[in-house]
Length: 178
Image 1 (cartoon, one colour):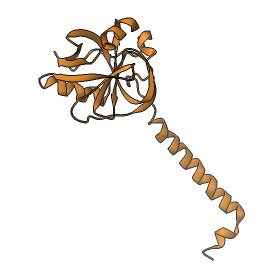
Image 2: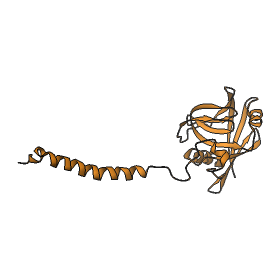
Image 3: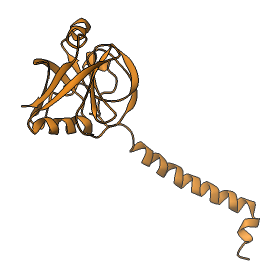
Image 4: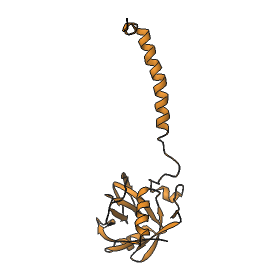
């Protein structure tokens, strides 16, 4: 008698419908909460030019300044954990990174420790600043496709100026917080 409900096909169909009518809306609500939020990090380098999602250079009254061989460059920084960690390292007395030319399109340098990362497959272009392997900063004066965590983008410089600044030998990159 306890298993009688299994013998009645309409009862079984009704139970399935009730489950589907309650589970599907609950799952939809949960998944809707996983959508993107306003103010997330800019992931498309083309949107830097549009200015739609540019992040301010200051966060919590701590502006991070980048210099390449002593020349200050303007950077629009991403709003992510990696930049926050880099800013903390720079705030503790500045951060100097010896960069080396690599591949004829980028300068790469170790920051001396690993910081949080969220790598995504991306195509970079001149001026992009990314984190590679969680412990290396890369500044591009050309283009490449790989999985990186975006850190920011140099603005106010032409591709030719970036190639001149970065493409003629190793450089020193320094980060300071003011």
